[in-house]
Length: 326
Image 1 (cartoon, rainbow, N blue to C red):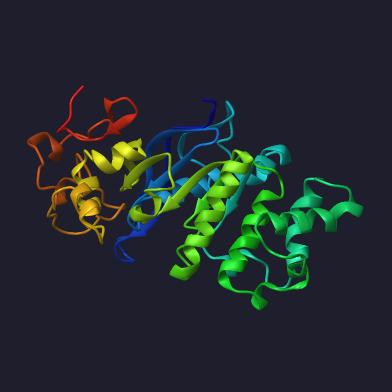
Image 2: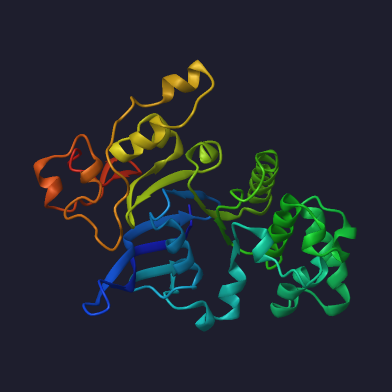
């Protein structure tokens, strides 16, 4: 398969002030701390994690909203580790985003027609006299009728707004679409429709998705591969089938064991219930050694002192844990 995106030891730190006014101290909040992965053309890679794990910051850094503190972002072999404002139009055309809340990502003062024609004009996708025709085509692609062109976002439902946001992302014929929790702001009844639409479009246009989510159950039948993030690091990444059937890291097992199930078949696939203590630590004050060791029931002596490096246990299945050795 052709490698489309490669992330190499990506770090994004934010300086923050801590302490009292008289004893103020600047420290680094390590939102992303040494993340590496790849995404092939036509693949769907899901990055999953609790709030504060760094998954969205990883996505925003790839988008160019943040400049990396360290590391490289390679797109089609080209280093794009710079802010979006400095990226060429040809690159911006290839990487598009669907944000979490279409209510805030769509301009409420513009009609759907104005929203969709902007990227078409900026990237000169079609001639001026063919704009309406192209907009109708985009709306049809996401199964919305042409009369939506003349509506404002406030006049349509949340699911329809997200379909407009998806149509906007497709307007430039991108290679990579970053999906930042695209269904979490929608009613449950609408989520399935949006997911099915995204999967259909991915097949029809051979799109690659970087899917950011906190919902493990959602991506079981969606992703090609799954990565689990914790405290700015990827702790496990594997093909989806291996990830759900053979979870290796205690944190992954803990998350999977907490997913509600409704059938005996699903119950049999769940790992044994793992009890952990506490909550995810602050990325301002990351524990020494393995970041998960304060919550891990299987921690070893060196987990308290050393930071484990990723180990490939089976082909394509990497885990950051001292329980597994090369």
